Image (cartoon, rainbow, N blue to C red; front, top):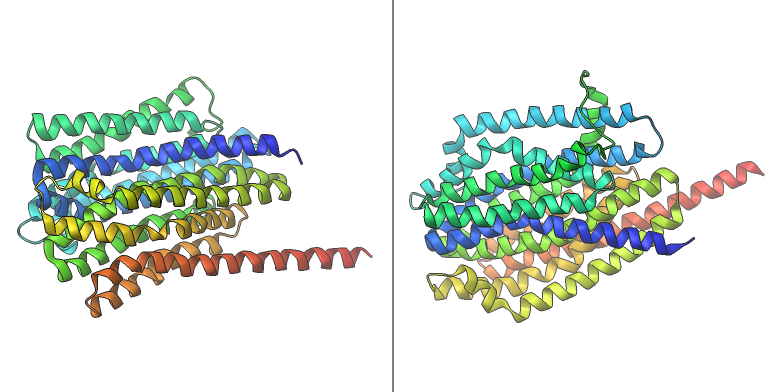
Length: 448
Protein backbone atom coordinates (compact mmCIF):
# COMPACT_ATOMS: atom_id res chain seq x y z
CA UNK A 1 0.00 0.00 0.00
CA UNK A 2 1.33 3.42 -1.00
CA UNK A 3 0.53 5.56 2.06
CA UNK A 4 1.74 8.90 0.66
CA UNK A 5 -1.38 9.75 -1.43
CA UNK A 6 -3.62 8.52 1.41
CA UNK A 7 -1.78 10.71 3.92
CA UNK A 8 -1.81 13.73 1.60
CA UNK A 9 -5.56 13.37 0.98
CA UNK A 10 -6.17 12.98 4.70
CA UNK A 11 -4.20 16.11 5.64
CA UNK A 12 -5.84 18.11 2.82
CA UNK A 13 -9.37 17.11 3.82
CA UNK A 14 -8.77 17.51 7.56
CA UNK A 15 -7.18 20.95 7.19
CA UNK A 16 -9.96 22.27 4.95
CA UNK A 17 -12.73 20.85 7.15
CA UNK A 18 -11.25 21.97 10.47
CA UNK A 19 -10.88 25.54 9.17
CA UNK A 20 -14.40 25.37 7.71
CA UNK A 21 -15.93 24.08 10.97
CA UNK A 22 -14.15 26.74 12.99
CA UNK A 23 -15.53 29.28 10.52
CA UNK A 24 -19.08 28.07 11.23
CA UNK A 25 -18.53 28.12 15.00
CA UNK A 26 -17.27 31.70 14.81
CA UNK A 27 -20.82 32.78 13.85
CA UNK A 28 -21.85 32.35 17.47
CA UNK A 29 -18.51 33.32 19.05
CA UNK A 30 -18.50 36.67 17.26
CA UNK A 31 -22.08 37.29 18.40
CA UNK A 32 -20.96 36.47 21.95
CA UNK A 33 -18.03 38.88 21.77
CA UNK A 34 -20.01 41.82 20.36
CA UNK A 35 -23.02 41.18 22.61
CA UNK A 36 -20.74 41.09 25.67
CA UNK A 37 -19.30 44.46 24.63
CA UNK A 38 -22.66 45.98 23.70
CA UNK A 39 -25.01 44.51 26.31
CA UNK A 40 -22.82 43.10 29.11
CA UNK A 41 -23.61 40.07 31.28
CA UNK A 42 -27.38 40.29 30.65
CA UNK A 43 -26.81 40.03 26.90
CA UNK A 44 -24.48 37.06 27.41
CA UNK A 45 -27.05 35.26 29.57
CA UNK A 46 -29.82 35.97 27.03
CA UNK A 47 -27.71 34.64 24.14
CA UNK A 48 -26.78 31.50 26.06
CA UNK A 49 -30.45 30.70 26.72
CA UNK A 50 -31.26 31.05 23.01
CA UNK A 51 -28.31 28.96 21.77
CA UNK A 52 -30.04 25.52 22.04
CA UNK A 53 -32.28 26.58 19.14
CA UNK A 54 -29.15 27.12 17.03
CA UNK A 55 -28.04 23.60 18.02
CA UNK A 56 -31.35 22.21 16.78
CA UNK A 57 -30.98 24.04 13.46
CA UNK A 58 -27.42 22.81 12.98
CA UNK A 59 -28.47 19.32 14.08
CA UNK A 60 -31.04 18.99 11.31
CA UNK A 61 -28.73 20.63 8.77
CA UNK A 62 -25.86 18.27 9.60
CA UNK A 63 -28.16 15.23 9.70
CA UNK A 64 -29.32 15.91 6.14
CA UNK A 65 -25.92 17.14 4.94
CA UNK A 66 -23.79 14.36 6.46
CA UNK A 67 -26.36 11.67 5.67
CA UNK A 68 -26.91 12.80 2.09
CA UNK A 69 -23.21 13.54 1.58
CA UNK A 70 -22.18 10.10 2.87
CA UNK A 71 -24.60 8.29 0.57
CA UNK A 72 -23.49 10.49 -2.34
CA UNK A 73 -19.83 9.61 -1.62
CA UNK A 74 -20.58 5.87 -1.52
CA UNK A 75 -22.28 6.08 -4.93
CA UNK A 76 -19.91 8.64 -6.48
CA UNK A 77 -17.45 6.21 -8.11
CA UNK A 78 -19.75 3.31 -8.92
CA UNK A 79 -23.05 4.58 -10.30
CA UNK A 80 -24.67 6.86 -12.88
CA UNK A 81 -25.16 10.60 -12.37
CA UNK A 82 -28.93 10.25 -11.98
CA UNK A 83 -28.42 8.31 -8.74
CA UNK A 84 -26.29 11.01 -7.11
CA UNK A 85 -28.81 13.62 -8.31
CA UNK A 86 -31.57 11.58 -6.70
CA UNK A 87 -29.71 11.68 -3.37
CA UNK A 88 -29.24 15.47 -3.52
CA UNK A 89 -32.85 16.11 -4.62
CA UNK A 90 -34.27 14.03 -1.77
CA UNK A 91 -31.96 15.79 0.68
CA UNK A 92 -33.25 19.15 -0.60
CA UNK A 93 -36.90 18.05 -0.31
CA UNK A 94 -36.25 16.95 3.28
CA UNK A 95 -34.69 20.34 4.01
CA UNK A 96 -37.83 22.14 2.77
CA UNK A 97 -40.03 20.05 5.08
CA UNK A 98 -37.83 20.69 8.13
CA UNK A 99 -37.59 24.41 7.29
CA UNK A 100 -41.38 24.70 7.25
CA UNK A 101 -41.55 23.39 10.82
CA UNK A 102 -38.94 25.89 12.04
CA UNK A 103 -40.64 28.77 10.19
CA UNK A 104 -44.04 28.00 11.72
CA UNK A 105 -42.44 27.68 15.16
CA UNK A 106 -40.73 31.06 14.77
CA UNK A 107 -43.90 32.83 13.65
CA UNK A 108 -46.38 31.39 16.16
CA UNK A 109 -44.49 29.88 19.13
CA UNK A 110 -41.28 31.88 19.67
CA UNK A 111 -42.45 33.47 22.94
CA UNK A 112 -43.50 30.11 24.43
CA UNK A 113 -40.12 28.61 23.52
CA UNK A 114 -38.28 31.55 25.09
CA UNK A 115 -40.17 30.91 28.35
CA UNK A 116 -39.47 27.18 28.06
CA UNK A 117 -35.73 27.85 27.74
CA UNK A 118 -35.81 29.55 31.14
CA UNK A 119 -35.60 33.27 30.36
CA UNK A 120 -36.66 35.40 33.32
CA UNK A 121 -38.21 38.88 33.13
CA UNK A 122 -34.78 40.57 33.05
CA UNK A 123 -33.53 38.88 29.87
CA UNK A 124 -36.74 37.63 28.20
CA UNK A 125 -36.94 40.30 25.49
CA UNK A 126 -33.26 39.96 24.57
CA UNK A 127 -33.50 36.15 24.25
CA UNK A 128 -36.76 36.34 22.30
CA UNK A 129 -35.41 38.85 19.76
CA UNK A 130 -32.44 36.60 18.97
CA UNK A 131 -34.40 33.34 18.91
CA UNK A 132 -37.24 34.53 16.65
CA UNK A 133 -34.88 36.03 14.07
CA UNK A 134 -32.82 32.82 13.89
CA UNK A 135 -35.93 30.66 13.41
CA UNK A 136 -37.26 32.81 10.58
CA UNK A 137 -34.01 32.34 8.64
CA UNK A 138 -33.84 28.58 9.25
CA UNK A 139 -33.81 27.55 5.52
CA UNK A 140 -30.53 29.44 5.01
CA UNK A 141 -28.78 27.65 7.90
CA UNK A 142 -30.03 24.23 6.80
CA UNK A 143 -29.09 24.68 3.13
CA UNK A 144 -25.68 26.08 4.05
CA UNK A 145 -24.83 22.90 5.97
CA UNK A 146 -26.12 20.68 3.16
CA UNK A 147 -24.12 22.53 0.48
CA UNK A 148 -20.92 22.36 2.53
CA UNK A 149 -21.30 18.62 3.22
CA UNK A 150 -22.02 17.70 -0.41
CA UNK A 151 -19.12 19.79 -1.70
CA UNK A 152 -16.68 18.12 0.72
CA UNK A 153 -17.82 14.78 -0.65
CA UNK A 154 -17.58 16.11 -4.22
CA UNK A 155 -13.81 16.73 -3.98
CA UNK A 156 -14.19 20.47 -3.23
CA UNK A 157 -13.27 20.83 0.48
CA UNK A 158 -11.29 24.03 -0.12
CA UNK A 159 -14.17 25.87 -1.77
CA UNK A 160 -16.48 24.74 1.05
CA UNK A 161 -13.91 26.09 3.51
CA UNK A 162 -13.67 29.40 1.63
CA UNK A 163 -17.45 29.73 1.66
CA UNK A 164 -17.68 29.15 5.41
CA UNK A 165 -14.84 31.57 6.16
CA UNK A 166 -16.43 34.24 3.94
CA UNK A 167 -19.66 33.87 5.91
CA UNK A 168 -17.79 34.27 9.19
CA UNK A 169 -16.01 37.39 7.93
CA UNK A 170 -19.35 38.86 6.85
CA UNK A 171 -20.73 38.07 10.31
CA UNK A 172 -17.91 39.99 12.01
CA UNK A 173 -18.43 43.08 9.85
CA UNK A 174 -22.24 43.02 10.10
CA UNK A 175 -22.20 42.46 13.88
CA UNK A 176 -20.12 45.59 14.32
CA UNK A 177 -22.35 47.64 12.00
CA UNK A 178 -25.71 46.42 13.36
CA UNK A 179 -24.86 46.44 17.09
CA UNK A 180 -22.62 49.51 17.45
CA UNK A 181 -23.31 51.73 14.43
CA UNK A 182 -27.06 51.12 14.05
CA UNK A 183 -27.82 50.26 17.71
CA UNK A 184 -29.95 47.23 16.80
CA UNK A 185 -28.94 45.17 19.88
CA UNK A 186 -29.81 41.46 19.93
CA UNK A 187 -31.88 41.72 16.75
CA UNK A 188 -28.81 43.12 15.00
CA UNK A 189 -26.60 40.30 16.26
CA UNK A 190 -29.14 37.71 15.10
CA UNK A 191 -29.60 39.42 11.72
CA UNK A 192 -25.83 39.47 11.13
CA UNK A 193 -25.69 35.74 11.87
CA UNK A 194 -28.64 35.08 9.53
CA UNK A 195 -27.12 36.96 6.58
CA UNK A 196 -23.83 35.05 6.88
CA UNK A 197 -25.01 31.73 5.36
CA UNK A 198 -26.20 33.60 2.24
CA UNK A 199 -22.64 34.89 1.81
CA UNK A 200 -21.26 31.36 2.30
CA UNK A 201 -23.65 29.85 -0.23
CA UNK A 202 -22.90 32.53 -2.83
CA UNK A 203 -19.22 31.51 -2.70
CA UNK A 204 -19.98 27.77 -2.73
CA UNK A 205 -22.33 28.19 -5.71
CA UNK A 206 -19.21 28.67 -7.87
CA UNK A 207 -18.87 24.87 -7.72
CA UNK A 208 -22.26 24.52 -9.45
CA UNK A 209 -22.05 27.52 -11.81
CA UNK A 210 -18.75 26.28 -13.27
CA UNK A 211 -20.15 22.77 -13.77
CA UNK A 212 -17.73 20.98 -11.42
CA UNK A 213 -20.56 19.45 -9.41
CA UNK A 214 -21.48 15.76 -9.59
CA UNK A 215 -24.89 16.47 -8.03
CA UNK A 216 -27.85 18.67 -8.96
CA UNK A 217 -31.59 19.07 -8.45
CA UNK A 218 -33.95 17.10 -10.69
CA UNK A 219 -37.72 17.19 -11.01
CA UNK A 220 -38.68 13.88 -9.38
CA UNK A 221 -40.93 12.46 -6.69
CA UNK A 222 -39.47 12.10 -3.21
CA UNK A 223 -38.28 8.60 -2.36
CA UNK A 224 -39.11 7.69 1.23
CA UNK A 225 -36.59 4.84 1.19
CA UNK A 226 -33.79 7.24 0.17
CA UNK A 227 -34.88 9.85 2.74
CA UNK A 228 -34.93 7.13 5.40
CA UNK A 229 -31.39 6.08 4.45
CA UNK A 230 -30.15 9.70 4.46
CA UNK A 231 -31.63 10.26 7.92
CA UNK A 232 -30.20 6.97 9.21
CA UNK A 233 -26.68 7.83 8.02
CA UNK A 234 -26.89 11.37 9.41
CA UNK A 235 -28.52 10.60 12.75
CA UNK A 236 -25.22 10.43 14.62
CA UNK A 237 -24.49 14.05 13.58
CA UNK A 238 -28.04 15.02 14.56
CA UNK A 239 -27.72 13.43 17.99
CA UNK A 240 -24.31 15.02 18.54
CA UNK A 241 -25.60 18.52 17.78
CA UNK A 242 -29.02 18.15 19.41
CA UNK A 243 -27.54 16.67 22.55
CA UNK A 244 -25.28 19.72 22.70
CA UNK A 245 -28.39 21.93 22.77
CA UNK A 246 -30.08 19.69 25.33
CA UNK A 247 -27.00 19.74 27.56
CA UNK A 248 -26.89 23.53 27.21
CA UNK A 249 -30.51 23.75 28.42
CA UNK A 250 -29.88 21.40 31.37
CA UNK A 251 -26.66 23.17 32.34
CA UNK A 252 -28.44 26.55 32.16
CA UNK A 253 -31.14 25.17 34.49
CA UNK A 254 -28.61 23.73 36.98
CA UNK A 255 -26.20 26.67 36.92
CA UNK A 256 -29.00 29.25 37.25
CA UNK A 257 -30.11 27.56 40.47
CA UNK A 258 -26.57 27.33 41.79
CA UNK A 259 -25.16 30.69 40.63
CA UNK A 260 -27.99 32.80 39.12
CA UNK A 261 -27.68 34.92 35.96
CA UNK A 262 -23.99 35.57 36.71
CA UNK A 263 -23.37 31.82 36.55
CA UNK A 264 -25.25 31.57 33.24
CA UNK A 265 -23.16 34.43 31.83
CA UNK A 266 -19.98 32.61 32.93
CA UNK A 267 -21.24 29.38 31.39
CA UNK A 268 -22.05 31.35 28.24
CA UNK A 269 -18.35 32.17 27.89
CA UNK A 270 -17.36 28.52 28.50
CA UNK A 271 -20.02 27.12 26.14
CA UNK A 272 -19.14 29.50 23.32
CA UNK A 273 -15.42 28.84 23.62
CA UNK A 274 -16.41 25.17 23.71
CA UNK A 275 -18.25 25.51 20.39
CA UNK A 276 -15.02 26.66 18.71
CA UNK A 277 -12.81 23.93 20.15
CA UNK A 278 -15.48 21.29 19.54
CA UNK A 279 -15.50 22.50 15.92
CA UNK A 280 -11.89 21.33 15.62
CA UNK A 281 -12.95 17.72 16.22
CA UNK A 282 -16.15 18.04 14.21
CA UNK A 283 -14.00 19.30 11.33
CA UNK A 284 -11.55 16.44 11.81
CA UNK A 285 -14.32 13.84 11.69
CA UNK A 286 -16.00 15.62 8.73
CA UNK A 287 -12.65 15.53 6.93
CA UNK A 288 -12.12 11.80 7.28
CA UNK A 289 -15.78 10.93 6.53
CA UNK A 290 -15.62 11.26 2.70
CA UNK A 291 -12.35 9.32 2.62
CA UNK A 292 -13.62 6.50 4.84
CA UNK A 293 -16.81 6.24 2.75
CA UNK A 294 -14.74 6.13 -0.44
CA UNK A 295 -12.39 3.44 0.91
CA UNK A 296 -15.37 1.47 2.21
CA UNK A 297 -16.92 1.61 -1.28
CA UNK A 298 -13.65 0.24 -2.71
CA UNK A 299 -13.33 -2.32 0.13
CA UNK A 300 -9.81 -0.98 0.84
CA UNK A 301 -9.36 -2.12 4.46
CA UNK A 302 -5.66 -1.12 4.58
CA UNK A 303 -6.49 2.51 3.69
CA UNK A 304 -9.31 2.55 6.26
CA UNK A 305 -6.97 1.26 8.98
CA UNK A 306 -4.25 3.80 8.16
CA UNK A 307 -6.73 6.70 8.02
CA UNK A 308 -8.26 5.73 11.36
CA UNK A 309 -4.91 5.44 13.15
CA UNK A 310 -3.49 8.69 11.81
CA UNK A 311 -6.68 10.67 12.51
CA UNK A 312 -6.73 9.48 16.15
CA UNK A 313 -3.10 10.58 16.58
CA UNK A 314 -3.96 13.98 15.08
CA UNK A 315 -7.00 14.31 17.39
CA UNK A 316 -4.92 13.62 20.51
CA UNK A 317 -2.22 16.09 19.42
CA UNK A 318 -4.81 18.81 18.69
CA UNK A 319 -6.51 18.18 22.03
CA UNK A 320 -3.23 18.53 23.92
CA UNK A 321 -2.29 21.77 22.13
CA UNK A 322 -5.79 23.20 22.64
CA UNK A 323 -5.81 22.45 26.36
CA UNK A 324 -2.37 24.00 26.86
CA UNK A 325 -3.63 27.16 25.12
CA UNK A 326 -6.77 27.31 27.28
CA UNK A 327 -4.94 26.57 30.54
CA UNK A 328 -2.22 29.17 30.00
CA UNK A 329 -4.53 31.89 28.61
CA UNK A 330 -7.61 31.37 30.80
CA UNK A 331 -7.71 34.90 32.26
CA UNK A 332 -7.17 36.57 28.89
CA UNK A 333 -9.90 34.47 27.24
CA UNK A 334 -12.49 35.32 29.91
CA UNK A 335 -11.48 39.00 29.91
CA UNK A 336 -12.43 39.24 26.23
CA UNK A 337 -16.07 38.62 27.18
CA UNK A 338 -16.14 40.35 30.58
CA UNK A 339 -16.48 43.97 29.47
CA UNK A 340 -18.22 44.97 32.71
CA UNK A 341 -15.31 43.66 34.84
CA UNK A 342 -17.58 41.37 36.89
CA UNK A 343 -15.12 39.67 39.30
CA UNK A 344 -17.58 36.92 40.28
CA UNK A 345 -18.24 35.98 36.66
CA UNK A 346 -14.50 36.08 35.96
CA UNK A 347 -13.77 33.64 38.80
CA UNK A 348 -16.57 31.20 37.88
CA UNK A 349 -15.61 31.19 34.18
CA UNK A 350 -11.87 30.75 34.83
CA UNK A 351 -12.38 27.78 37.16
CA UNK A 352 -14.90 26.25 34.77
CA UNK A 353 -12.68 26.57 31.69
CA UNK A 354 -9.79 24.67 33.27
CA UNK A 355 -11.98 21.74 34.34
CA UNK A 356 -14.53 21.62 31.50
CA UNK A 357 -12.00 21.39 28.67
CA UNK A 358 -10.44 18.18 29.97
CA UNK A 359 -13.03 16.52 27.68
CA UNK A 360 -11.14 17.26 24.44
CA UNK A 361 -8.95 14.14 23.87
CA UNK A 362 -11.85 11.82 24.69
CA UNK A 363 -14.25 13.75 22.46
CA UNK A 364 -11.75 13.67 19.59
CA UNK A 365 -11.62 9.87 19.67
CA UNK A 366 -15.41 9.56 20.11
CA UNK A 367 -16.23 11.70 17.07
CA UNK A 368 -13.77 9.73 14.93
CA UNK A 369 -15.19 6.39 16.09
CA UNK A 370 -18.72 7.61 15.41
CA UNK A 371 -17.85 8.61 11.82
CA UNK A 372 -15.98 5.33 11.32
CA UNK A 373 -19.04 3.28 12.27
CA UNK A 374 -21.26 5.41 10.00
CA UNK A 375 -18.84 4.99 7.07
CA UNK A 376 -18.75 1.23 7.72
CA UNK A 377 -22.56 1.20 7.33
CA UNK A 378 -23.08 0.59 11.05
CA UNK A 379 -25.32 3.60 11.79
CA UNK A 380 -26.75 2.14 15.01
CA UNK A 381 -23.30 2.00 16.62
CA UNK A 382 -22.62 5.60 15.52
CA UNK A 383 -25.97 6.72 16.94
CA UNK A 384 -25.33 4.86 20.20
CA UNK A 385 -22.01 6.67 20.70
CA UNK A 386 -23.63 10.05 19.96
CA UNK A 387 -26.52 9.45 22.36
CA UNK A 388 -24.27 8.05 25.07
CA UNK A 389 -21.85 10.98 25.16
CA UNK A 390 -24.46 13.65 24.55
CA UNK A 391 -27.43 12.57 26.64
CA UNK A 392 -27.41 9.30 28.58
CA UNK A 393 -24.29 10.08 30.64
CA UNK A 394 -23.83 13.85 30.82
CA UNK A 395 -27.39 14.81 31.84
CA UNK A 396 -27.56 12.45 34.87
CA UNK A 397 -24.05 13.64 35.85
CA UNK A 398 -25.22 17.29 35.76
CA UNK A 399 -28.23 16.54 37.98
CA UNK A 400 -26.05 14.62 40.44
CA UNK A 401 -23.82 17.71 40.65
CA UNK A 402 -26.94 19.84 41.24
CA UNK A 403 -28.17 17.64 44.09
CA UNK A 404 -24.68 17.76 45.63
CA UNK A 405 -24.72 21.58 45.15
CA UNK A 406 -21.27 21.48 43.51
CA UNK A 407 -20.43 23.75 40.57
CA UNK A 408 -17.08 21.95 40.22
CA UNK A 409 -18.88 18.66 39.55
CA UNK A 410 -21.05 20.41 36.94
CA UNK A 411 -17.89 21.29 34.99
CA UNK A 412 -16.64 17.69 35.37
CA UNK A 413 -19.85 16.17 33.96
CA UNK A 414 -18.75 16.52 30.31
CA UNK A 415 -15.17 15.15 30.69
CA UNK A 416 -16.41 12.13 32.68
CA UNK A 417 -19.15 11.41 30.11
CA UNK A 418 -16.71 11.63 27.19
CA UNK A 419 -14.22 9.33 28.96
CA UNK A 420 -16.83 6.64 29.68
CA UNK A 421 -18.14 6.90 26.10
CA UNK A 422 -14.62 6.48 24.72
CA UNK A 423 -14.13 3.27 26.72
CA UNK A 424 -17.39 1.85 25.35
CA UNK A 425 -16.65 3.04 21.77
CA UNK A 426 -13.26 1.31 21.79
CA UNK A 427 -15.00 -1.81 23.12
CA UNK A 428 -17.49 -1.71 20.22
CA UNK A 429 -14.62 -1.32 17.76
CA UNK A 430 -12.86 -4.43 19.10
CA UNK A 431 -16.13 -6.40 19.03
CA UNK A 432 -16.49 -5.44 15.36
CA UNK A 433 -12.93 -6.63 14.64
CA UNK A 434 -13.63 -10.00 16.28
CA UNK A 435 -16.87 -10.39 14.36
CA UNK A 436 -15.14 -9.59 11.03
CA UNK A 437 -12.35 -12.05 11.82
CA UNK A 438 -14.86 -14.77 12.67
CA UNK A 439 -16.71 -14.13 9.40
CA UNK A 440 -13.46 -14.40 7.42
CA UNK A 441 -12.55 -17.69 9.14
CA UNK A 442 -16.02 -19.07 8.44
CA UNK A 443 -15.78 -18.13 4.74
CA UNK A 444 -12.30 -19.68 4.52
CA UNK A 445 -13.57 -22.85 6.19
CA UNK A 446 -16.49 -23.15 3.74
CA UNK A 447 -14.10 -22.84 0.78
CA UNK A 448 -12.12 -25.89 1.93
